[in-house]
Image: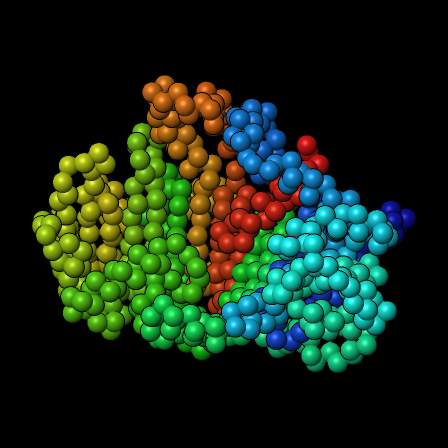
Length: 563
């Protein structure tokens, strides 16, 4: 037993050493890139290891769905219509051949609306072998590749292709390849790579804003981007003046010190983190998700977030859905004489929204809710809202069991809706049909939730940190099942009446819903407040922010090998 324990201890230490080495390696990899770039860098995108990302992509749920024979049969015809598919496959093959690592592209400055770009990557093998591939790419970077010259700099040969202002300078530096439309900036990168410029304080790595943002990112990632909007302030001001936007309307953007995001593959799913750096001195309430009690076993979408009426922006800088719609609501009630202080006094401004889709229903129902703090002021806002939405359409008012209902009568149409507002002393519930709103009122009184007791919801909720600012849950499997049931008959009928559709897609080969849904786990997103900004973490087959870009990138990288 002692020997077994010793073996297990040694194995654990070794495994920990491997993980530590891998993480240190990628952390050093990211540091190497940031030490090459100037401190004032405006934007950066970094791809540490294409091969590793491709291998992890092949284990992802979305890729396994793509590889299903039924899905392949359905996609065969539309994919054959994609132009330049062979060129994309060849590029992916070249990337694999070079074993590209630490690929990056950065905007280092903007002069007269002309961005200065610098990009590069590390490659495997000799420079002469790499040039066989890179020469093809270089020729595509400029409009007139026939204009060519070279320049010697510190024992390096810089190739300059094209004519100003569209020239591109490229250079090899050991196993690095760099390209830029800014020759002085490229020379500065060479000096840092060679170690001649040893002033670390002039590099992006030493910038306090970048350091504050990157500390919120995962140690390992497949894709990272960074943006410093404040360095764009002069350009933003020029753009505002050019298109006639008042300065205070973009002040929110100028309050953001940095935006940083990263995405990685995690046990078949995609996990992403997004940080928005800005002053966060307000003592805002924490999210309680009290509206969860309105969920049912048929809820496929749940959203909870804190509203900020002072800024007339629907979401708390989280980039979540419905922000523009809520902003219009605030603006409409303001025109009707409702002040921001009225909203604050009337409601606990934690906004909840849920979408249900029972199997027996043709279309989903959506409701939104706010808790009531002051019934009298809440009633004032609702009355103002019913008149502000559409002055020409009458609203009917009724009362049931102490709850006031406001019904908007809409003309008969293909998709008839009856917008309904229910107002009690505890909550305001809004929906597009009276049946779902009245059912939600009953669930609110009951206090039970079919959503929170769902194993799917419980498993998804555990994948992200507890939220303090916003939370989103999407049951993709349920949503796809309901969409398939609703749309498949319509698609089949459309194909029968419009045979030309078959030139692009074979509707008869739509994969069975169970083939798709077995690879679809929920999308879950959680936003929390930090002293220097807001962090949103998402996980799922795709995520709600940059995780959408990661599958597209990985697919393009792997597509060449598959063909």
